Amino acid sequence: VVSKEQIQRGYSVLLNYGDLCNDLLLLDYGFVIPENPYDTIELKYDGVLLDAASMAAGLQSPNFSSPTPWQDDLLRLLNLEGDGADLK
Image (spheres, rainbow, N blue to C red):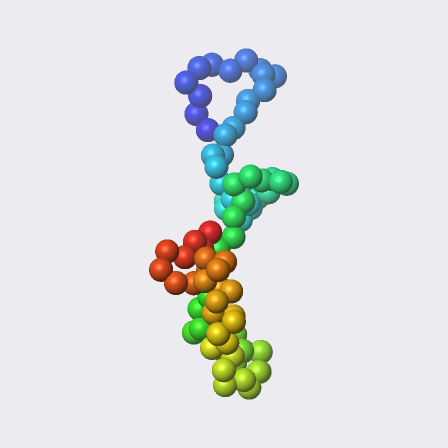
């Protein structure tokens, strides 16, 4: 950290880390902020990842990654699938 001005001994210095989510704060700086308004998660429906996860878990469902029509409708309604999906 570099200051443009001389800082007196004992003076409080505040650092602004920016609008970061908790996973970046934890990985880069070693702390998290409770109730962080910039904390986000990314949600994405990905059949390939679901198939890999089901194989890793030892599940033998041939249609694990294929949602039923009502599940497809729900994913689109929640804006998690399709054109313009909001994944953050």
